[in-house]
Each structure stands twice: as C-alpha cells, then as structure tokens.
Image 1 (tube, rainbow, N blue to C red):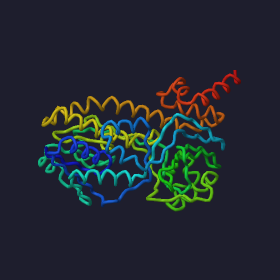
Image 2: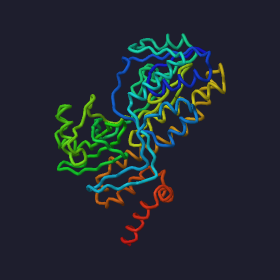
Image 3: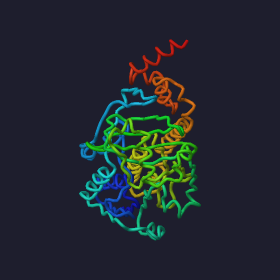
Length: 379
C-alpha cells in the first residue's frame, strides 16, 4: 500500500512507524512543512495509563522512547502558598524535541522517507497519487481547511489566556500553582521534563490579563511580569521564552473524520485541552487505532476507516467532555479560592466528574483521610 502522511508530529510519525513495522511492503512517506528540528513548546507529559497503550502497541519503541524520561508518582496543588501532595498519580515527562527526534530515528531505521520543509499545495493531487492519505497536520490543519465543507469542523474558543514558558527551576512533581495578585488570579501548570528544564504554562482570565496590562505588553514584558508573579516558586530562576505569545484554547471537533481515501489524525481531528495532559496521548492512540484498522482490513481503506472510527469516536467524545469540564473549572476558579488548601485540591481532583471519592481513596488514602477529617470538623 502506498501511504502518504502530512505532518511529522507524534500522530503522523507514530502511525508511520506502526504501519511499516506491521507490513514491510508499505511504501510510506511523511511530508512536513517545517524544517527538521523546528518545534515550539517545551515538554510533554504522559500518565501511566497513556504509556501503557504505547507499551502494548510496540514494546521495542516504548523502551527507546521512555529511556530518558523524567518520572514521578505524585502531583502538587499549591494554594495560599501551601503545597498539597496527591500521590498515586504517575507521570512520565520528556521534551517535545526529544520525542520527535526519537520518532524520526525509529521511522528512518524502518526505511520511511520524511521530507521536511515542504508545503503541500494540492491535497487532491497528493490523495490521487496514493492509497491512503493521513492528514496529521495539527490543530490548524490545511487539509481539514481545504475540505471543510466535507469534514464539517467546529471551533470553540475559550476565554482564558495562556503563554508557554520554560524555566531552569526544576518542578519534580507535576505542579499546579494558584497565585492571587493585585490584579486577579494567575495559574501555573509546571513540570520537570529533563535534568535541567521544566515546562511552565501560565494561565489567566481575560479581565485579570487586561488589568495587569498584559494586553499591551511585549513578549519579553509578559515574561518578566509572570516571573514576578511566581517569584516565590521560581526562586532565582527566570522564565524562558520560545515564541511565548498569549493565546486562547481553541477546541476543535469534526463531524466527519474521513473523505475518500483521506483520514484526519491527532490535533487535525480533535484537540484536547492541555489541562488534562492528554493531547499527545490521544494523537498516538489515534495512530494505534488506525494501524489496527488497516491490519484487520488489508487493502480495504474504507473498512479500515470504519474500524478506526468505531474504536476512537467514543474515547474522543469522552475526553472532550472531560476537557470541557476541566476548562470550566479553571475559568471559574476565582469562586473556589475561599476553600482551604486540602479542600481546594480535592475539588480540583474531582473537577472532570471522572474521579470518585473512592477512586481518590485508592490512589492516596492519606489525602482523602485529611479531606474527610476536615469535612467532619466542619459539620
């Protein structure tokens, strides 16, 4: 089968790798518009559940991929300066560039051609020249845009503002820091992803953002302002920029996932908000499901697409519903700041409706016992 993949992100590269390993006769090439090594952002984080899918799909690649990950088995929620630890939450972190480099090397070992620095102008001609065209070209997918009338995408722009930074301050646990300032509430999502660097994502509601003058600030002025807000956590370390511009979360859905021999994958198909840490995981699970569909229906692209959708639509819908509830929680967090640190952390852990009190008790009996004791005192 001749397979062309647009986009050398985790969805496209991982699908290419799995498909080639399963069927060596596949002729696979990947087309990426950006130069090799060009990536924006800092680290990526996986839960133990997310990593289990990768291990089952390809144990050999899993071992290579996770060899140098940073790991921890707890998270911290920081409220009013108090650090509340919640254990039983296993996370594995790596840099985005290392993840893509590992995928690229694995693909090239299998004989997969990756063409960097090439923009696709005529998707139709490309689709006509292959058996399967995988559109894994990200949240701003040009393929989806060209065939928008068929895919019928919908977009929901959320209200809070975000800026991605890095820092040399090492946040070993995945840390959520809620800081009240004179202008309003600032939130930091932070985690160490290498021996020397951490991701530091700043979130703020639009009214606070404007009151702080960030709507008029330059990229560097914003960076210095946020470093000052979180000075207690950053210590002597500064925030580092990498096109760290303010943006809003744009939630993408598609009514249809395929068109002819074209299929959407990863962020081109659907975006999942980073407050759940599941975007890369979802993209790679898409790749696993699409490869399974092809393996179950060799030579029959339409049957493979049907199998792919049957497996992934329920999970996609469930994750996006959880992400919407998580976004709602963050956007309304000002109304929860009256809670004591333990109750605040408990409310955070149950924000999606997917985690019950019993689930939390199994993960961390000490944390739930502390919450139960507070609740008993309040009665």
